[in-house]
Image 1: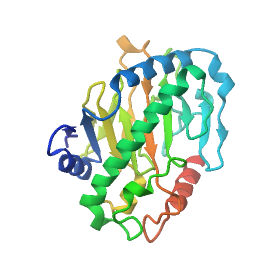
Image 2: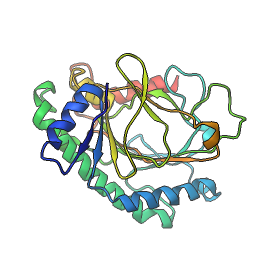
Image 3: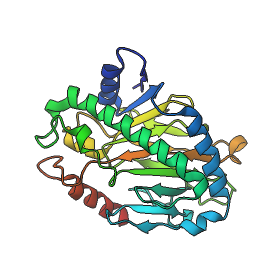
Length: 280
């Protein structure tokens, strides 16, 4: 299994994107319409934020939509389904109306605007080429179903390793995303891997400025598994690089929660079921 790199300047970009998502659940977009210089600056600025003490003034709160907004420290970070150790990470959730430090707010807002537009474009490509695989409520409507209030920009910080980590703990244990699609700018530090169909792990290709796109569980449910939600993880760095932190900025694109994904689920009921499972 190979995750394809799709040049968005290519006349074949649309079909190449849909095909690699069908085969692998992942695609890498080259020359995406996102400001690469801004993304590099955001990575530097957010690394400084996480390494400072100001983050404790922005502890997360639940929003009316059920999302969390703000800083989530390592001691309350996630434990992936099927694992018994917390991931080695901390993160900040950004949704509409999130209060951000002034020095970070403008870049985050501009990046979110570009990411939403890119997400809508990609969902539109899936509308055209995968419409027959979708239920009536979503057929031809994926792009219009994008919900800014239910979608989420997560700024992740994987801190340097100290040697005191719990044995077996990793930066992000194997998991699948819950949402429709995820847009993930390629990090300057490696570590992201995807599981191939034979169960082997492989590095996801790409270079800074590229954007990784993957299908989430909601899209897999809506497409009767024609667009797979593939397991992925972030492994710990080798000892020579263990003193380096890693910044990741996934944008989890979700639909309106009353949209019907299948005869079994609306997006809202599917989300609740998955969150209940994570909370166990």
